[in-house]
Image 1 (cartoon, helix red, strand yellow):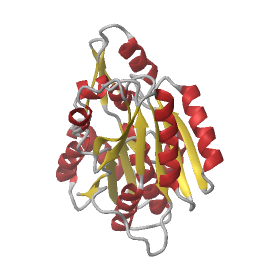
Image 2: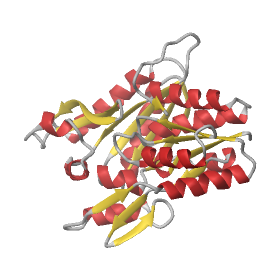
Image 3: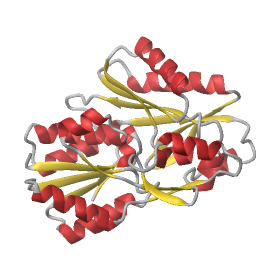
Length: 296
């Protein structure tokens, strides 16, 4: 295709989708037990779940290097693409977008258009998928990037965690730590707002948090066409229950993906985390919400 789509390993798209659309994935790095490896290649979700569950276990992550992106961009261009759209997790949560921008400046900013999804996991993944579909239909580079931006802008990412400790350690919880203060026994429903993790509401038990997660997802989905994703880390049964509830309560599901979070995001949410990503279909003439995605 004249326009190729690149993303990072935190989009967590299904493998068959990545292969089918020829999406290029640049992995983040995960450090555990004194060794560094590439997410999805050297380090699996199970590795992270075990490390975080162990006493004193700690996992950290780091962005791909600009050189990693340069190598990928040049390989894709050498394979026949004319232009690239590179879509990545929120710049508020990772330096990945910055690394991609640096790489684009070396390869040629007229060749590579870099988009900050202002989200993560399938919050980014649905934007990548929309861009890949637009590219497959022959859209030019500006239209492909715009489709990614618009899809990211209308996508909601909601989740609950068993403990906030992993988010606090990694510095990803932002203002949520100040708002929750000492009330860490409360189970918050969190979401990604303008690229940051912030609390949506607080409830008293895990069961109520999961119920509110479903309710919030149903409200965000509305009655029209919608794409959904359910993520988890080491909680497959909980994720399948969520998916079953969503199938029953959301009338316009076009696609629903259930997948385990990879190592890079899993390291910050911890075992037992579950989330729902809601991406309503575009409506003719609809106005997108501002500031959910940024393009560079």
